[in-house]
Length: 318
Image (tube, rainbow, N blue to C red; front, top):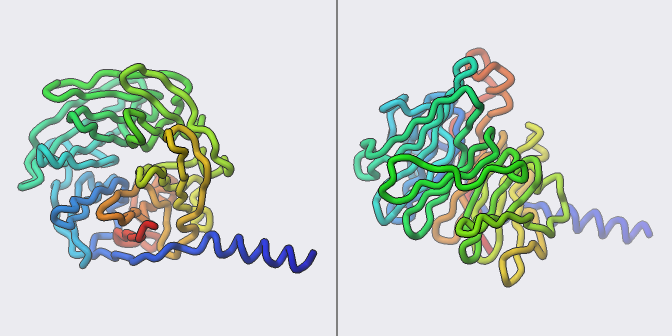
């Protein structure tokens, strides 16, 4: 029995060892409070959005940053999800700000060649809204989550205003979303775990099969790779539980059949939020410091000793 317990413990320890990876340490200011990440694999450029400085930075593997979107450029607010539309050579981004009981949310598009604003839509409401993460369909349609409103929006090519695709309590607190196999959108929600949505029919169902519901109900960013769904877990504000998890899907892509830990409790983790794919590598934004920032009333004043420059962990997928 002792030998069996030892083997179980050994297997558990081995199962959470990080996959082969490198760490990109940038020279960014410590007070960015980064949230969203995307990689332009054509140029090898990494883009990261900032909540506190209300901007977007860009850098390469050397970690030397430059400003892509200047602080509060054209009304850019607290930056969250970002994605690249290669065909249009645009970077799309979501930003938000709350002033008392007024919630302002924006969707922006920037020219990748010069950072100029080429599209912007603003929504202001006394009803809580938080435009959070987005994904771009092959036809150019953009889908994005509104966490406070429990909804998924769509912005069709050429449209000047997004529209609500679906709003339901089954999508309470939606966050990361990504296209899976076929037309299915896979969505992380804090209330109901992983969900799957067919945008054409608006059919919504759970993505079942996850064994560790503590992980699956606390996912932030999502990516899809090789018929698997990879999520970033950051609920709890404790580095030891910050996790990158990979879910293998069945042939139809509508059920989880296996899961494994890519990494947990990495030394540079401080509330990792989102991830991006490029050339079979997974880029995880490792240190948002959101727990410290939120506990400090959305301010970095007086907590600089707890903050670190933007750091990205790059995993070789297998």
